[in-house]
Each structure stands twice: as C-alpha cells, then as structure tokens.
Amino acid sequence: MGQLRWCKIEQLDNRESKFWLDWILGYSDKTAVNAPVWLLAYCESGVTWGKYEAARWHLGSELFPDLCPRPTPTSLLEARIFWSEAEVLIWQARGCLRGRVLKDVTDGDLWTQPEDELRLLIAGKVLERRSSFSHVLAVTGQEQALPLIITPARSWPRLRVRNYFEVDETTGAIRVAATRLVEVL
Image (cartoon, rainbow, N blue to C red; front, side, top):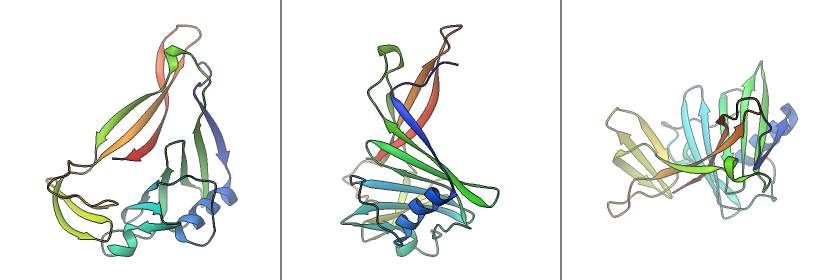
C-alpha cells in the first residue's frame, strides 16, 4: 500500500505508554496537550470515560465507581486519549503496555484528505447526573457514564471520528488506513 498522508504516527513503548496512563490517574503532569482532552478506556470489567479540564482529569470511575472501573496498568485493555489535534492509543501486549500517537499534519493531496464522521454515542435514558457526568441506560441494557451533562433540551451526544486515507500505488484504490477519535459533541 501507499504512504499514509495527513497524519503522523509515533510508536510508544511500555515506559511512554505508562507515562500517559499515569497522567490520567494523576501520578504525573502532562502540560503539552490543549484541553479539552477526552478519555475512552476499555478495562476488563467495563468502560470508563473521562475529560481533562481545569488542569485535572475527571473520570467516570470517581463519580460512578460501581459502574466504571478505574483504568490501571493491569486492568486496562485499551485507552484512547484524544483531542482536536491528536489521539494516543494505549493497549495491553503480553503483560506490558504499548501505544501509538496519531497526529494531524498538513501533508497530502485532495484525494487523501481526511474525512470526519459523527457517530451517536450510547443513547436511551439518563438515570442520574453527577458533577459533569450522565449515567445513561441504552434500550439494549448497556450502561455508561458519559463525561457531559445530558438534558432534555440537548441532543444525544456524538463522537467525532476522523478517517485517514491512503492510495494503493499499484491499483489506485483509496482505502481508510487509520482512524482516530477527535471529540465528544
């Protein structure tokens, strides 16, 4: 396949991946990221959302501990830390953490320019609101604590996803080669 355009991918080793996770858990400082920053963490026992604002992380596991697990190096399956310019993806790999950073760059042609799409997050009934989170129950029975206040006047939240394309130099076919989360709306 061809070279990926409009973005740059950097690999993260165990130490670098753990540094990002430590930032989420409040054990280290990371100041080079522009807020708002979002977190979507898949753990062995459930999903935890988070939002970085006012110089600290606000996690669903703090407000809804019975619903949302606290992401730790041993319980984490995958975490996406994302903001307007980039996404950090961390995952478990044979007992250690691995990851990658996908950043936007302006290097590409019109044919491979990224496209954003909006995806509906879990929707259904708001069971409870605490601080800046809403505990939501979907018609399927799925429950999550989303990092925003959902009111009757507000439409159901959506997730902006950015798709990056590449061109097969042999056939000319264009395909989605990478995807990242951008923001919660």
